[in-house]
Length: 313
Length: 313
Image 1 (cartoon, each protein chain N blue to C red):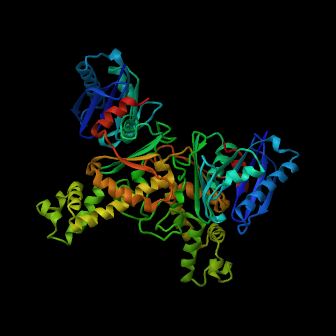
Image 2: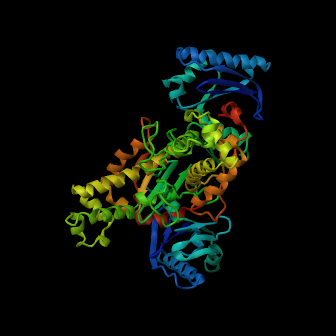
Image 3: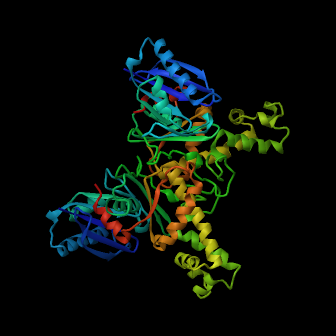
């Protein structure tokens, strides 16, 4: 038997056939369309699932279940997507609609939780009983695994590390509050800090890299220059890593999982980021002379969405 | 069969005989002595346990296990107390020493975790599968219950909500860091805020209540005056409740337990505090239009330490 994993994103929707070992047998990607009726959106997804099954030489009879990861929250009981801003969904009957054209059990879960599950079963935290997966990109997402299972909280609203408050009365957040953790630790945060810094330094290397246009600054550019020991980039990177270290310490102080996995676009900075974070976060852990959670980089990358979704149960 | 519960505190040590329903059959208290050898400290505790058993008309043969709550951390594997600042203990062989004079299985656990367990089995969160207990006193302690069991983390260093960072580069904390949550949400924090405020208001009611001596300000005094609608006290209380609301929202956003229980000295403020917190914390929850964790006051009070310790398994 195989499982279908669907990774719904704001720009593309990946669908894969996944075997019991967590290996992708076939996959395909379709462009996300948000300006068509909801029922048509789902029909495009089930068509993609059927197409990828054909590619794998299988039929619907070979499918045990379907898992879907979304950038939002869903109800486990009703199969309704409660909120998914990127897709423009609010209280839509995802499962019911899906089953009209693809009558198999459908499980829907937040995409950070799905990636956390994938890494904890088939990725870098495989074999661990507890882990917290932190995606560092435009925002900060997180997924909690406890005793080998996704923990979304009792009401399904947990795992939102990015919106815990880290700076009282701090930087305004898109969510309407101030001082949310993702305002300090995301790629967006590093870009904001760099834009502020280049204002007073028209001759800096960061500006040169982007042809003098601060709007073209990316997190990758700052991190690459820090790696090359550019003084301003090093200073920005260190400040940002200190924030990220405090965020990770918050997870260690409160939940203390076996492993903390860093994923998302920024994690491509690799060992350079990992080394910096590993030396920074213990400063903020209360019992820092004890064994602490291991910090590791995600290894499944973009495949985590499809693999993790297929593993939902 | 009964269990012995021991609640080790900085001023007193409570020992109780607890039956299977979580009821205390007999208990006694001894004064904490920290200036005697460790072996004598333990001997006083095992003597107290024997004495309280006699009071209950029972013998050591009736005892299934012994549980001990400490204001610190211990190793489940070795029975060693790793750190317990109030008692002056650092890496002491608690279990081994205890068993010399009272040869029964001894389980040692952090006192906030013990209180969390007590409330979740025999108190206000009884029957819930997940809860977070927050003690609001001199500092902020917390205990996490997941699937009916204490979660201290993989390395035993979790549950330290009080030392998660809530204000980057904020108020210095006793732990050596800055901006720890307990610097804003504890009784100590409210007292600090009140002391700062009375400086510029020599005629305020808060100062009158303490005979003009800011050092005599207690959290209870500020809260009582806020209840009586004293303008300055109301303003202080509201600001402090906003911090506490953000701390509670952090727990809801990240872990989302079924119930969040407020205990510790400050929780004696009762419904007045509860109402204020219940209306404040949802403002800071990302999915605030969903069902949120219930906020409740602890009901076992000082007995939670003995009852919870006896329930350790």
